[in-house]
Image (cartoon, rainbow, N blue to C red; front, side, top):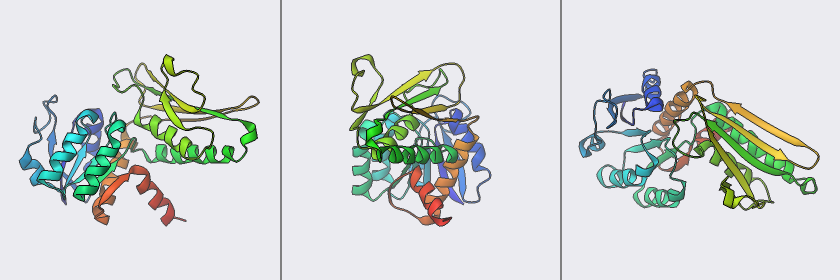
Length: 259
């Protein structure tokens, strides 16, 4: 069993903790959260980092760069799995830290395996439509989550936008749907709606003058997120990987194996 820290014991972290009990590889021996009295530790200490083989992080995207820097200095062999969002503007900085320090880092905007497959389907649809440029399809992403979710658009919505961007030729970027950006037809618009108790819902629109194609995915609970987080963490440990990975790397390997 691999000694693992769970950093962040919110709703998602708590679900991951219970899901880990089914693992034969991962042993969460320390839970850390300054705002949850049920956590074993209120602070992630240097000692915990030194004594662990993996950290699963569901804390805050604002603290991710500092966390990776600490790990690189204290225990560069500590494998990092994170599901936090709100750090996409620091992605290059994270990648640089991982490369320079020979770290292991895996990010999941959404650890749900069905959502990952939905993302691949979105990219494939974009690729199919881009073969027929005369149809002039536009695209957008709508993200709906509960009113307590802090980020204005989800990491999953951004990943969906990036997947479209990667597979289309008539767009050159993404923008979050603020009024001052409306009219940027060369970019993929991403809109976030925060209302009620929705655990996660995404719509992808491919819109032309004559047709509208809508792809839709809705999560019913956090169970699938937690399961995917644990499975991909086990994958990192079993393969003893080094480098920067995203959850889709794990998914793509599984799909390749099953061909």
